[in-house]
Image (cartoon, rainbow, N blue to C red; front, side):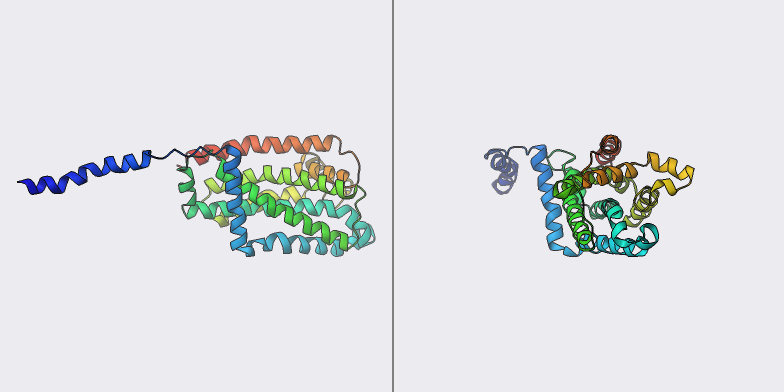
Length: 281
């Protein structure tokens, strides 16, 4: 009669022992929102380290776009490539970084499909940290693209009148807008089911924003209905502000419009993203 008592007693004490062991140490301090975001940003950087091929889009694409448009349209639009590159380079910087942002949604959708974000949701950290960290990691990729595009421009004759300070301020403004635009792709990655569908929808959005703007030509040469679109296009405001900063001039209301559009994108699509992130059903 005593044998069953000897075998069942350790099983009954096991949960108590485990609970005691878990409660014996001090609970780690909950990380701050900044610390959690930077940690997830470092995760994005480690992905670049282990898969450097993903830098292909931020290195080859800007070089190809800069050389192609400069030597294809420079002579026809400005009479010389040297004259056209002064007008084109700030716009190409904007276009290159905006095109790269759509890979944010592609990467996030891939992680969601693997179940990685199900694990992130269970962690006791600031809830938006995985998404903010991913966008911060992408900001590094955007910076690499901006540096490469600027160096290519300098090599083929671009001479910004605003100097290094003007170029840095212009690139910083593009990074702010790219970070804001990235929230559109994070939201799409949570409502669309495949990375390919995100890329398709992103192209439908980016194409009229970039090609229907003042990146390549002066809007004064466009028909009236297209000038009206360029007048309200946030990318056109961004390009004008960046051109002014890199030329050493005051950007004026275009800077206000760009920052306003950035704040609006974060407010709208950041809210939608977090709503969908909290309730994936």
